[in-house]
Length: 236
Length: 102
Image (cartoon, rainbow over all chains, first blue to last red; front, side):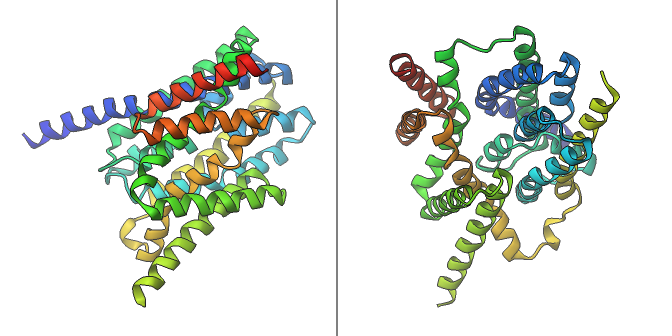
């Protein structure tokens, strides 16, 4: 009986994850289409472009790779640069690990592949426990969109009509705003965390830090600062 | 496919997967000090702030595009619309704006 309940639970988690991922799948469409298009103009073959989306599945990393390839950067330098860009995945993985259901390591190792800015923020701001099934559903729909539209962008060679494309360029930001506002309305701590990080990120961006480092430092400093202030107020 | 390109893609796959996987597979919550746990729990909301700003202002050369799109998303979210609606509203409003102003 217990086994049956747990199976049903993980299945419903999967469907819930798929649904939660629809916004991400929509948001990835213009980004992946453009990646496919740029990959072609950079001189990659269709298989190389799609293989990169299949094996890497990281927007920022893939875009930066194209621009490095375009200026003739060597293989080792590209790989090392991307390793640095990906440091923030380490932070997101450690953070989501505090919230997900305990499960066998190999199952967690599978959905770990699907951790992106988007799948992380959607799952981490969700209410209640995050099941393994939920993570599978969430990552699968996001990943499918990413891979399919990479190929689509490459083959079609042009992206959506210009007006629609300009409109869709805001989709992922709209999603981040939609994730933040409900929690920020209820909690001043959330508002403060986001506000301080936004401010620090603007400062670091202005000081010409690379995007990857600016976001990691802003996030980490804001998270520590807010915790420190709360701890201090409790002690007084 | 050139072998150099294949090597680059495989290298990228490895250096992207490892940071995603190590904490989830090897970190044990009970071994992590509670102060660090609290900081990690703050990360999702802090990173949302950093992901939105100032990036949203750079989606177009015209700074108004980001302001209009983000404003529409903010309003829809503030009024309690669910996530997909927030995205749809923001995209539609900005497409309409782009139609008239670009």
